[in-house]
Image (cartoon, rainbow, N blue to C red):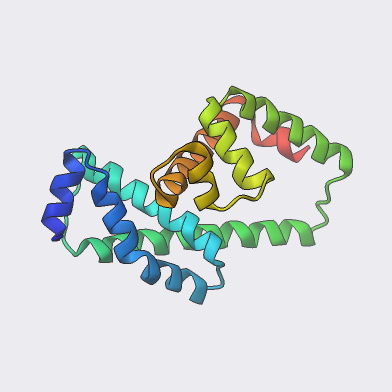
Length: 179
């Protein structure tokens, strides 16, 4: 598929373009993140986030391509990974500064998280529990949920995680988690 064919499919809402892009560029994106102190799991999450950002921009019709799609995706991944590394660095610095959580704080945060999880749709709730609590692979989740393949499960998990993040951010302030 050419870049123009991919863009045309995205504008039509054809998710086969997303699957094609995912598979075509996966190894390059993952290698870049692994070479920059990331894990394969972190790389998958970053790559999915980059694909979603690209998809939304392309589907909106506001995307002006001045390079190949793979180059554009690579840049998005680099930027997202830099932000993630900055976030990790800040967390390490906070730990060095003596910010320690006790068991009660952890339990309170778990309650807040569970409140938001309960408000997600049943599908999202199941996917997130399968992945984070049951430690199931994407293939296993796809089988349990009746999805076409692991890539579909990954995309759904990513969207559900974003929805959970949004719920948490709208209901709670940063102070709720830092006190």
